[in-house]
Length: 220
Image 1 (cartoon, rainbow, N blue to C red):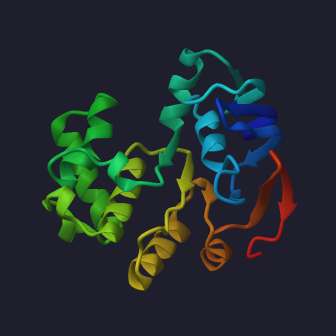
Image 2: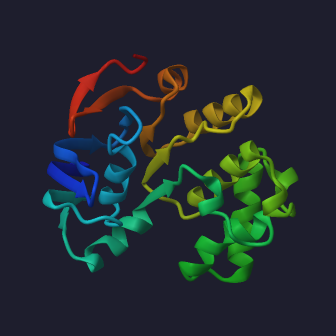
C-alpha cells in the first residue's frame, strides 16, 4: 500500500500562473524520497497539498489508503504525517523548548505528565536535553531546526515531510541532523537544494520541472 499517492496534480497561484501541471508521486513504507527543483517550482506547494493545507485545482490525493478531498478527510493525515517547515520560526511559538515539544502531545489528549515524559524521552534520544528549558526565540538557527524536528517527532508520525531541513545548519548540526534521520523508522519526503545532504538521507529522487515530477539521481 502507498502511504501517499498523488495523481495528476495541477495548481496555479493567482498572478503567478501554474506551478504544478500534472505532478504525480507515490510514497511507500521505507521510502526516503528527495524532491528537487528550482526556487518557485512548487515543491513546498506539493507538501502542503499532501496535507490538505492547499487544495489542488485538479488531481487526486490518496493518503494511507484512502482518497482525501474534504478538509475533514485530512485531519487524520495531519496526525500521521508531520511537516517540518522551511522557516523554523513559523513552527515555534511557545516560551520554552519543552513547551513547544509538549504542545502536540497535549493537543492529542495526553496528560501533562505524559507530555513531559515524551519531551524528556525525545530530547534524550536526540541528545538535545541541554536545550530542554531554553527560551525558544533565543536559540540559534541550527538549534531551532533541530527543535522543530523534535516537535514533529513528539506526535509520533508515520511520515516526515521535511522542507529544506538543513537550512541554517552549521557543519556540526547538519551532521547531527543526518545522524538523527538515519535512526528514524519513518518514511521521509525531503526537499533540499543541498546535493550532499540529499545523498546522505534519500534513497530516491524526483525532480520537479515545468510542473511535473520526473525520476532523477539523488545527488545531482
